[in-house]
Length: 107
Ligand code: FES
Image 1 (cartoon, rainbow, N blue to C red):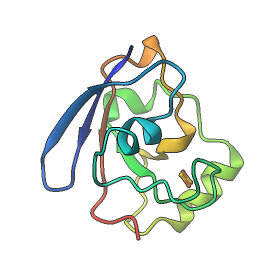
Image 2 (tube, rainbow, N blue to C red; image 1 turned 90 degrees about the horizontal axis):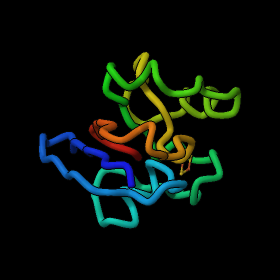
Image 3 (cartoon, rainbow, N blue to C red; image 1 turned 60 degrees about the vertical axis):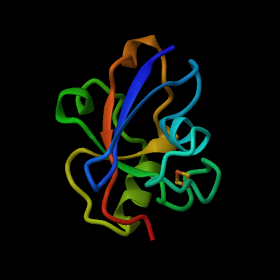
């Protein structure tokens, strides 16, 4: 299972093992980690799963599809070059060690 480090805006770190096939959003919400809401349940329709993927990992992810890219223009916190929607990142062994930072707010 890939291990993911979620870093809250406050600086608090949570390291969790997330089952293969789960999304980055699910890894947070189903483990009770604050800072990612996932209001639409992963349908790419709310942008409340916005994360800043650590620079070293950002370029290893598949590029955002058009629908994700459009939703990233609707985030509550500023969009940055490494902004992604957590519900669109499916975890696998290749992403073991991924680091994601939560923005200040999701709403
Ligand atoms: S959970 Fe709604 S866009 Fe990701």
